[in-house]
Image 1 (cartoon, helix red, strand yellow):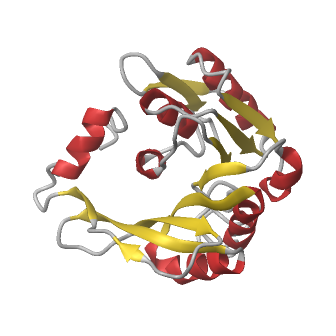
Image 2 (cartoon, rainbow, N blue to C red; image 1 turned 60 degrees about the vertical axis):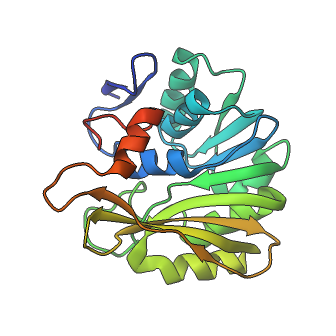
Length: 240
């Protein structure tokens, strides 16, 4: 696999494929939304090159994260990124199918997060496991999260707004109740294209919708929200 090195800040960097699917703003936004505490155990369902655990570790502390990835090449790349950033004590990459998460993990998790494929298997574009529901559906992702979470554990997922109903149904069916939602608006004055939803296992119904996270002003300039992410080291000027 040909690869390129992407600098996250002056200290941290990750390799990702030179061609094909590479992480973008969605992964960075999800990293900014995941909450974790020092003694908590987490899991990413479909880690790709492992960029989100690296971003989380450089900003916050946690006991450990299990990063599941079905593609052998990407799992190997994720392990290398964990090693090169000195995080092997707290991030463990597991090659396997997220649908088998309960069997793959040695313990239950306090928090789970995912940036799953957005498109249905028969939706337009060249079929890709990273973009299309070829290897897993949103229902299977939510079910896996529900199976490995402790009671009141959190599942944070980023998802296209036009398929919000699919996500909400999948979460409730998995016993993980949607509790918080952040709409993400690409350009001020426009509609949300993606949403970030945090759900809790076994929680009572009741959804709080946060003010929209606006990425760009009408003139194309960055917003204050993006500046906060820059200051936290989650976004770079190129990605914003």
